[in-house]
Image (cartoon, rainbow, N blue to C red; front, side, top):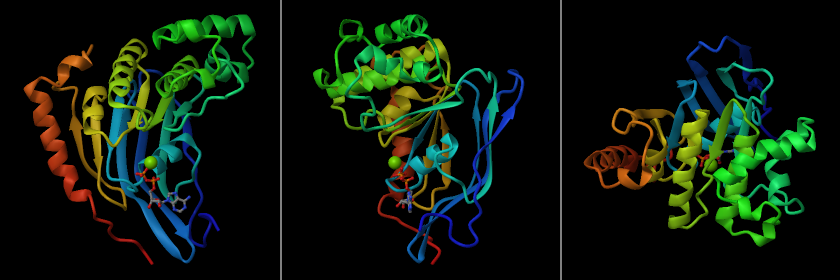
Length: 283
Ligand code: ADP
Ligand code: MG
């Protein structure tokens, strides 16, 4: 089975080498994704046009099953698209193009924190001394310097996600794709990790696409928030957060501002109609 049913063309993203001056990092046009589920077809993404800017923190919110993970997986090259184009504009061919951070812990239990964080660099053939030197600041940025020699079973859930984040940034990809990375954590840990992520991102200014089901989280982190409709996933609205909250941001202060409440109310009033609606499957 899979998605190779008749009539479904197979494509992956095209990588285009362009000079650094180009401000659009990811250009998506008329993107469609249709899965074959037995004899049924499931439209996951329908006719999406989207530009994501170089260095932007772009958040995506939408009801469960609306195609958020599918979109990230297509951008990552882990999933094919059914139609349309995606262009990823490359600034530095010596860096990995993208790096995915998942909700579930994806660190290796047999490696200590330092080696987990250095994994991507090792895979790229970077020698031990250099990769340890390069991961050191990121281990510090996520507050794990006292645990560099510890193994995952000795860490809490929040600490393991810190390892994933340090690894993703140390790997230095052009695009960071994050799929609900904090969803399994308790509120306090989540909040602390949001603060750390904002701080690291503000230093590195990577292009980040961040999927979350939390409106709060999207406002805390994002420059813009894309609200998706229930399946088939379409763009309902793109909200500009950066117009309200300039950088650098103090996550702990945002929530008490009137603008936060206004934005939350606006996004929720738009999103709430999407819960409980599943529309338009082709049969
Ligand atoms: P989200 O991340 O927004 O919760 P997904 O992108 O995981 O949603 O899924 C979007 C839709 O596509 C869902 O209806 C899901 O069942 C369907 N889907 C995802 N992956 C597959 C697959 N490999 N085969 C068939 N259907 C899939
Ligand atoms: Mg998902």
